[in-house]
Amino acid sequence: MQKKRTSALSWRAYAGTAIVIPLSALLLTVSSPRRATAQVPTGSIEGTVADVRGAVIPDARITVIQSARGRRFNVGTTSKGAYVISALEAGDYEVKFTAKGFKTALLSLKVEIGEAASGNVNLEVGELNETVTVRSNEETQ
Image (cartoon, rainbow, N blue to C red; front, side, top):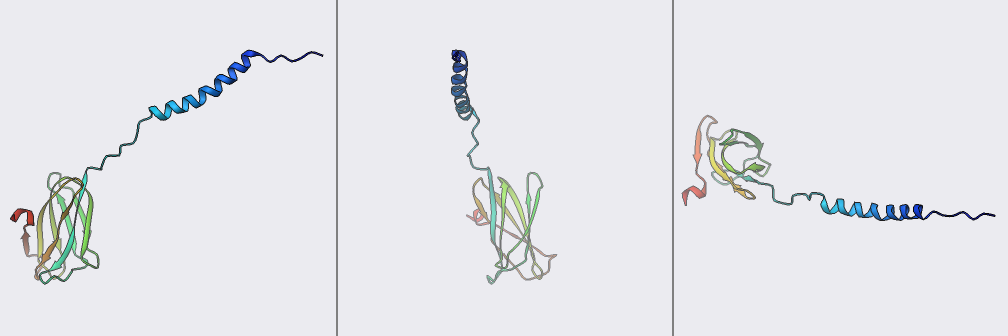
């Protein structure tokens, strides 16, 4: 009866494969590019639309226009008169507020990275074709 001889070469090939595969996986993990964890370079505008007495105005329409590019964003207020426009590039914006039975208001705001610019406004009773320009608190200080 003859004994089967296992080849030393086949054992080495198997052992080499067993080491190479985990080592390759480790190298791929270490050398793969990592995801950026930096903050997204955007900001937002948020606020409340109310009348001159402080009563909130639901369903007011807000149009935000980016001064540099002319991009427009539209949103309406909630039942509590609140609104938020997020993911805006840093820069200067013109904000237009309209609501039935009120004068249109315009507000200039500067959006900063990682910040929420305050866009609170009080609308005056009047017609939509009348416009009131509102100055932000930053401009008056």
